Image (tube, rainbow, N blue to C red):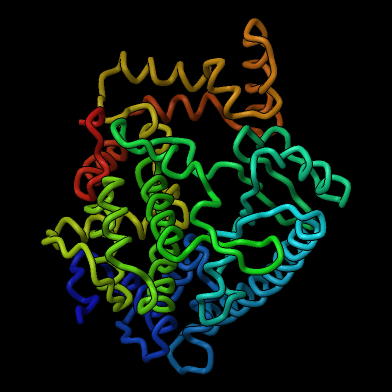
Length: 409
């Protein structure tokens, strides 16, 4: 069993943060260094894991800062309260769908939370449900009639967004809409959602364990490639494996990850799971460079729950590992003036709009970003064109973890 202490580049606060998470997962004693509890709290906050950290320290004489302990307790209580509201909203949706005989798949957080020691502590930004595309309009009418508010500007062809009682819901007809590599068709691979789903009760389904695990790795790879991923995603894998280690068909998982070109990426994530959380994943035993892997873990720790924290994501998105000013300018224009096809895919309000209306689509797009979302677009453009080490580091890390496609080289 590997120990987390080989990670020479982690400071004491990061080591303590990871070891507290490991302690919670494995129900054992945390080995802590002398650290700053305010810094640990900051890490817990940006990764949305304050409730878990509180559970790890509660009842133990290990948190030397009463101020931080009270803050963690406050986060713990608010996390549980919000989880209760989320579950009530989710149950109301399931009831509506079952009553109307609409089959649906629960996945991601609403399933993963059941693998945690305390399901209320697995935070979720939104609830995710999959339905058949032919039921999209029917479900839309049902939800609106039952008090759910439709978010037209945030919805697109494959995902419609709703809210109720402060809870966001994403209703999917498609779960992957972008390929990670040009030579692998991820969109088609995940096109038949119910093919790999198992009936749980009434009209509620969940993915079989292998398919759900593979999807989580693809979802994590997508986040990592286009912005970054956080500690919670790694912790999800650790809880998933701890709960289902002996029932997963690991040969199937390895075969599918290799088919999707994610064997090296998965091997890096599995190594982190082992080093951080003592998780045994019996496949893809690559010989990895621990020095390079420590750079990856630093990047994950710094990035927050979805990898955005403290990064010049705009520079990453327009650089595309090219670096030349003309190419960056060209990429920026594509963001400012999305194509007709991009607007149709991105926004449900533009789906049936004639092509000659594209300029009006741009105006509404700009209004949404600048006026409604109060986005400082000029500042974002300035950041994107700034000489940024973030873009160089990001693409270097993609190479390390096996996410650099042919066009990225």
